[in-house]
Image 1 (cartoon, each protein chain N blue to C red):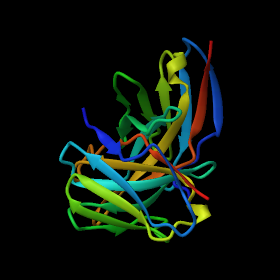
Image 2: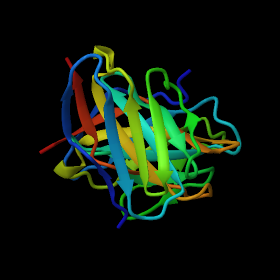
Image 3: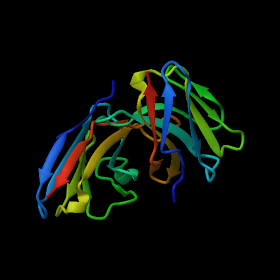
Length: 112
Length: 114
């Protein structure tokens, strides 16, 4: 069962904000939401994570709804280098460590 | 900066061959992971290890085994490669379980089994 669902693709104009949605309706109280991105021919790269509060760092902002069933990753001023596949991930604690459940991601294309 | 390296970027093997994929990390991380990535399926966890000589099955362990003899090295083994194991293989590492156990990924190995 998929723990996250994301739209398969999105476009965004260069310089505009890119808002990438993610549904995680079955998330449990102790499961974090992580976002990674993967630029072509590279390994995934960490962007941001959160539990229930909104988070911001130098790369992006993460908005988590109050019921935690969905979240949005915001790239405030998209550039051409932000073209990548963005993965919304639920981190599930287990007895032996945390497991990351990747979805199929959203392919974001930033258009000049 | 954390560095995770994988032994090959591209690999071509024949059906039935034994294949070793090597992964090395230089940040003294306890946890290491092997994923495979296929179009339309995203990343799927094969095996992970939380300590030397320890291993746990992920979601798709069938046809694979792993070895972790040293903390910095995690090997993925295909005992008898098959064409359905043609894929991109990604290794990752992370520090001990905690609030911010970000996974750091290597560049990937694209394996083709003929």
